Length: 146
Length: 171
Image (cartoon, rainbow over all chains, first blue to last red; front, side):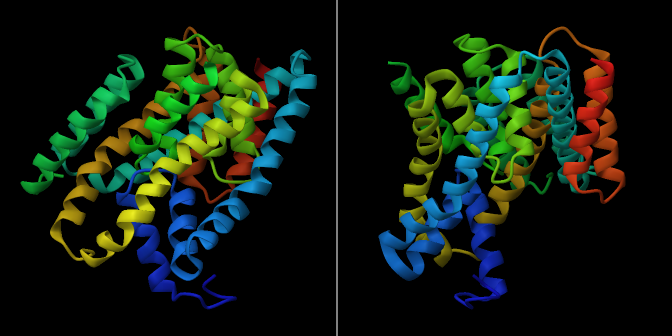
């Protein structure tokens, strides 16, 4: 959209993605709807959403269907489990990368740890954890602690 | 019935998704595995693996979960329900938000959300790598992959391929 069609400038694009990050929802869905709307209204939003989602959706479902055929074979099951564990590792790496700017802020680290323990070990519902964490986060942010 | 439950759950999850779908993986797993027992933790891990290795946005994990729980209709319901409510909200409030793009509240909100998102994504990694009793082999693959991702600029697909190889040898 930026380079080929010039529908918006790179700065505008970054700004839109940035704003989508303080809105809830899958980024890809929000961004497609907001950008689609800007030029072509409702039709644009629908087309952008379906265009971005359609093909990958078919792909992932096709792979899942294919995998179901072979998942009873032990070695294949083991390989896919290994891929899952590696994917889990990528999540840990993402947490580390996103957490680096927080490393020197004890209040932020305490919040990170509390969220991790409540969700990973306590298995407490996000409906409980999220409001509490956001409230504490806002308090800390206003005092420049995070 | 199960479709209605899926729609309600993913519809609510839509509004809890900050910082990308990665941060709601723990809640998704908790709901379908722990609370409803629709699938096992091992199954969830397999779906996660398929979604991660397929091309496309990671929101597609929701369509796989929906598919596994309630078939083809479930896949569409779950994907639609996690995208549309927040999408409709974005449709209405984006311009308003854009007008206040320089408001200090935006920075405050972003900083307030950061620790939550980091904790949730870390929790997602832990939960996926621990589908049953702690298994050192899964943790080894996860930690090695994390280290590889942090220390190198390898394409994540290579890291997942290495994880698959390790899984085939160790598990």
